Image 1 (cartoon, chains in turn purple, orange):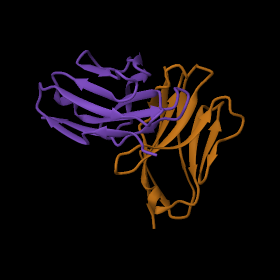
Image 2: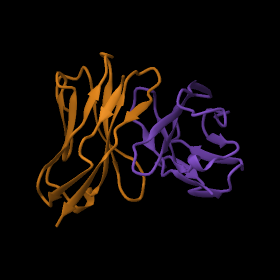
Image 3: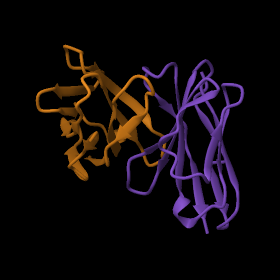
Length: 113
Length: 115
């Protein structure tokens, strides 16, 4: 079946602009996660959704970052007033439940100039 | 503090030989899960193997096995009969509570398989 998909694959934006990153999870997966991976580092947790609600947003770095999952499927990560330090690969993962293994998408490479 | 440590930034192995990638962790939580992921140069994270803290036997998945030593808090990945396609970055990760399922990752180990 289809895996996790993310769009766009690459995004270049200017400092101060607003961006949206999209994630389509595997069909039937109720748990959805966002991670951020800087060059040469392991992924860092941002936020976890169970269904439509954000069950754990403890990894969001500040209030410029926000994510939604209005219908319990597709999720959008939104970043306001982007900064150069936001440049990274943003990974989305989904799982059947919070106790199951997570399957990752290909990521969105965000570059803030 | 909950932490995952991978002390080998880079490893080399000859094709067809076995290799062990180290991972240690620190937690006081009695219930946790350990994962290994492979990340090729394409960037996608590929799930390899899982070990639960209460599992009595070490996990195995094909050529991958997890050497779980609970008292030492280590969860090393063993890849047998290495193939050129195994060249990639490997991440150890831990889930500390099944309530949220969030993973905490180590820094990763780059594995290069030599022909």
